[in-house]
Image (cartoon, rainbow, N blue to C red):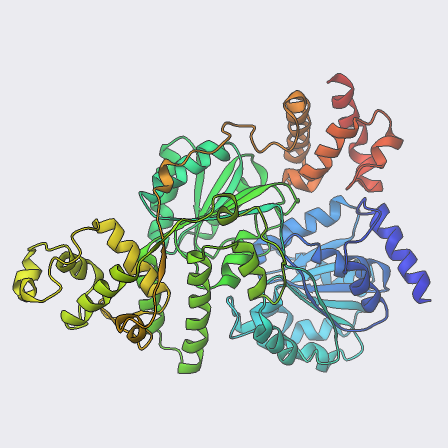
Length: 603
């Protein structure tokens, strides 16, 4: 029976989704669920988590219930399933009158393969009642890290999902996430009662993503240069820490001629929905957003993710950058950050009303993020190590590998900085301490008579920006602490050895990132085809866009870029040849084969 069910799974994989082989460990996860076993799946964004529950839900009798945290994305997931010939529906408060009742009716009659539902709706007594009247094939808990209070995206509604095991003890459950360190994994498993579940941890590496982090120096202009030189006309996401900065950045990028739209919780539901629709359905749209945007976004052709502020944790950074290049094509994770980011996040953390245990965990996560930003060796090796993954050799596809970091002996400068903080009473911000170091007679310096301290003017050899770099690195490495009231800096216990001459310190030599030029530029530098095939590539994209517009679905729901690339490379001329392309299932072959063959024939 087990062998027969896996045979059915392979048939569904090819006929419905258009693939002939599974990526490891998809087949093992699917096999476990087909055997009615629970599973915990940790797999990188773009690694194919969805197939792990979609295929068992189709093969097994009954309807699969998918718990998804964001209502706005459910319809896109349902559209993608419907295009592939899967009977899917979603239930949420935004649906028209009568819709949810109709879904319940179809579920009771066994007419659906999948239902996407929000956690707050799932836990309602009336929902549990009608679910008990259905045959359920499985429960899939997507974005399972939301259940962890020590994770980076906690949702209180997820805490109640333990009721699934209590109410439906014989229905297999699978919890899936892309971002969880060892502590978060343990909490997910404990809270969801998955102690007996099969655990599948996939490699975290996304080799197609190039990681780059630079220091802020006119950050908007740096961002514009990056987009214009490397990703003009590409889809991308720009993350900012505040709503005001999101609005201002989106407006500024639009004024520079880019299609940029804001997205944050302060906008009306209608505006958020409209901007998200543009992002999903139009080419070359840039969304500027807070972290409110992105979870569950299944747009495969996002070519870059940019951060104008430092994320609070490596988990958040990894998940947000993971929204780039889900199709496996070359993509960029680009970030600029500066001293003000370090101080602001340290202040926010210190001023939090959370308990001390939570603060310690948050501090550890921020320190790890700062470590990734300041590291002078391979970023990917550190990123993988954080999640318990091992990479023996440097990746060759991050800025530290491509342009090795220059360091300098910052021991003397660091001692001067720490001494000046001490001599001025450990109750001033970095700007004032730098003024003292550089011997500037500002009003504040004279007000506190700091022109008379022994450290006044001892740092005149460095510029203000160079001193800011020194202080940023000292704070990031834990030699200085930050007071949450007004950003005052004060010495940590760690600074003692450096001040006493018992250790030395090598500092990163910051460069003006805005002056760096990419080796390539222009509209087509990220097109996944050769220059000889650009015209055919664009013709196929136009065909896909027309078909998508006719059905009011995002273009990638028709075919991913990877499938279009396959068309360009193999140039099929018959339906039989077209059916062999990656991502072409039976329904899509019947529905779109002739349309694309016509484009290929006329190229």
